[in-house]
Length: 129
Image 1: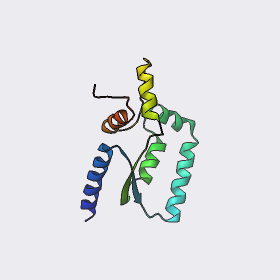
Image 2: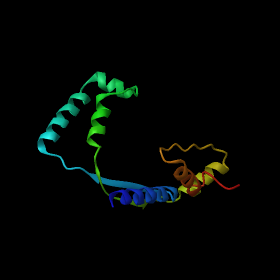
Image 3: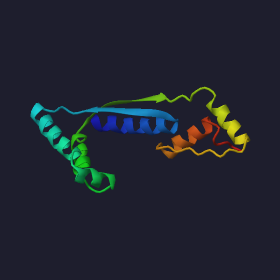
Image 4: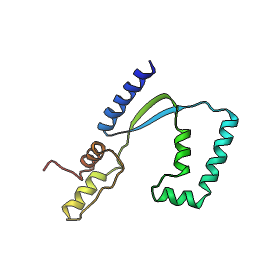
């Protein structure tokens, strides 16, 4: 049952992302007070360490990422949601006017490629012509 829920949720997330929707996944894990206190102490020590901060900045293995991974493991899926990330009024028209004026525009995003393409079309940064 849990495996099927994960598969269904994964499929929904892919579909929603391809439709240009913003997604959010909910999961939880029960912690005892002692476990939380121990983790928080180790995490604060790692976050206060210039050595660990520099390792993280340089994308090297580090205690900060290890501790985040530790806390984010063995989670129980609660569900997922998606919502439309609407553009501000007049964004597509403004971008189209910039393009007509010969102004080059760049879109930088951390989205999946499919989502970025959908946003590009919605903003008229990308056209079929």
